[in-house]
Image (cartoon, rainbow, N blue to C red; front, side):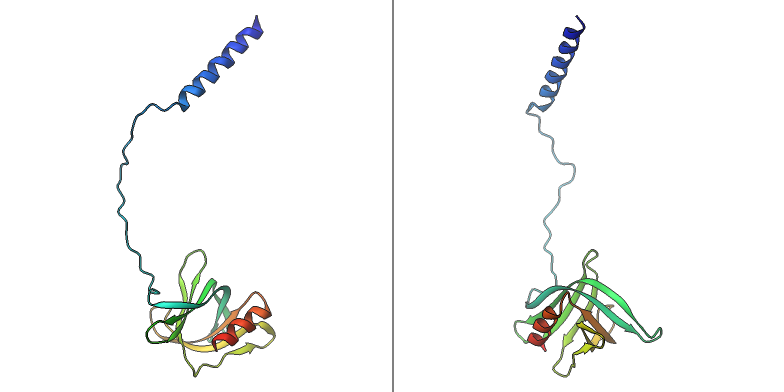
Length: 154
């Protein structure tokens, strides 16, 4: 007799679960209506020449050491009308801009001493909202990527 009580309870539970999955035809309206918003990135009039992952450092003159500026997507963007190229880099998780400056013909990009995956250059950067002269170092995943991308741009 105990086995039939157990089977009856199991059949009752299966019926209850099946009833919960049934479509009742009720319609629940959303509480908040979201409007579609146009998002501008500031890159609408530019074409990407380079878009890859790298790690960026800046030289801290006060501490006389390299400090990590961010890890993320570095882009070289060429303006469609003026032809000017700028370097923009944003951090992966926060999307905070960690580099934003023009790439000028007078810039000298050199291999970083002791690390053949890295390059060093000076630039007047605007990432923090004010123009500052910075010494940057960027490290790519491999030597081949550094050679291909740096030689293509500079």
